[in-house]
Length: 120
Image (tube, rainbow, N blue to C red; front, side):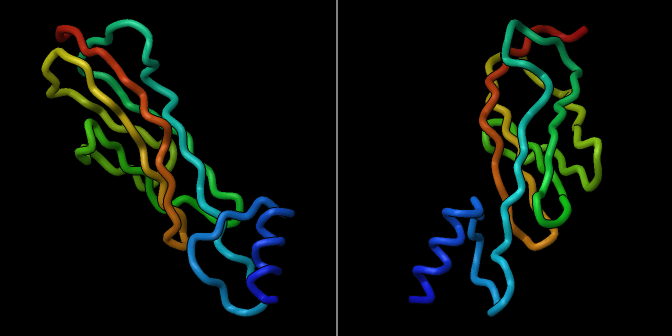
């Protein structure tokens, strides 16, 4: 019966469960994150900033990490969340951002595919 109550509360309140909660506490709601720049349209020149927005409905954002083709390139500990990417060869790259909240919950942004042209 207790599990049913937790599942029902998640459905009714839209909670995302990232672990178990102590009796009487709500489960941690996961943060949200999305990349705001660069946009996937056209070709971009280096260096450029990768920017993201992140929020947490029941706490605060501890960090936002930026990944290129799955490899960590930078971590921002406070807003504005951004990273300068300078040493880049021309080609196509997949960018993602991972936000971690103050309770240790994390979420990954949708991927943004960019085409890098020549240096400015």
